[in-house]
Image (cartoon, rainbow, N blue to C red; front, side):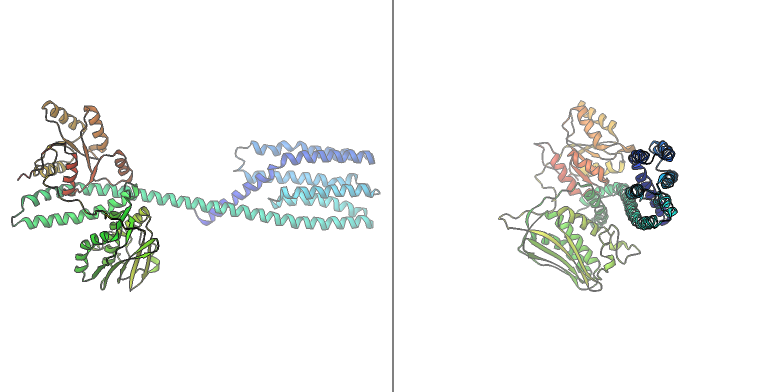
Length: 594
């Protein structure tokens, strides 16, 4: 909406409120005026016996009888849209009312009875004083109410011509001018307050519209990346599993290096997809912080191996200073937060290095990630935490990442309640400061390690039912499980899984676990399908969901179900660990099959 349209709409709203205020007092003012008019006529008839009193009373009664025309405003369902019409009608009624009172001095004001003349003058001035505030919302109504009445009184006094009446006329004229001045100021004040109110409401509506549009854009972006991530994860998941099979079968052979390079490429692509998944999982609220007291050194030591080689490749120095300080945090999430900051620092530093140092400050610990890179200009400081925003990368060079790292930092900062502050010197470097609560050292440090490869003593399920609508995925899973001595059967949908379960029960060869994709053919819900199958066959069959979903609402649903889930592309070690947790008690340890 343009500024002109907004201004017109504001003026329409102002007029609507002005008209509503004018009509709000119409009934009470009409009743009070009728009582006053009848009392005045009774008094003047009793004192003067002038028949013109009844002539004026008749004119005034006609005015009172016109009240139903005014009251029709309240029965008009389109009154707000027809404010201009009702404003004109009210102005005409006021004009007739004021002119009727303006005739009173001409009809029965006595020429030789100063007390009665003064009484009539005071009554009319009192009407003006009491009525002006109620008509002040519209200036046209003020003029219609004041001028005819006062013109009639002043002209009647001037007509008498003697000094006393001339003096009274002068006093009434001065009073009228003062009253109009007061009414004008009150009108402007009321109008200004209404305009300000509606301008603020219009601004609030615009902001609400912009926020709604932003929310819709964010939701559309989330849906797009959820769909894109899912479609990319499906083939990558199959590649990762086939690659793991090749890596295991080619060990000790000259071609084993090719399998390792394949798995390295798969890992790199999986890392990029996991970054987008992290955003969705954080937005969905499915990541919960496991806050505890930990030595900060364990977090820093876990970071060094991950980034030392990257810094060396760029001929940069990476220093993570040891510290005895303990902090209260989730060590895994804090490592991810600091890792993103370090990765960002290495990415934008051409020479020099990156320093990570912790400084206790009372009840807090400042963790600074300082680099000697290109720095961040002030105009970019507020936007670097937005998704896909990268300074000085208009060509979207993929070697510089996706531009999501700092947006994850912001989300993790809010989740952990660890404020992150940015200070930068363009051309000289940048410092990110993370503020973490300080903790007291405890005798037993928290363990901090990544999932290990399957131990020789761990058992795996003997038979597994695979439910996935994509043949490449089930073929890859079957091949991978076979190398670990696990038999599997596949099904494309819920009906196929039901048939497989029936056949297994008939052969007395039950399945030990079910691996099910979250999204099956034609949009079927794998989680719901697995729950129905368990209920239908009365099984306590463990279920493991494997999915490429990143939509926040679906991730939240999976979390609420309590069913364990792995995200595509699944790391083979993580898959084995998850399967080991599903193995029935007493199952023999896993055996490698070549």
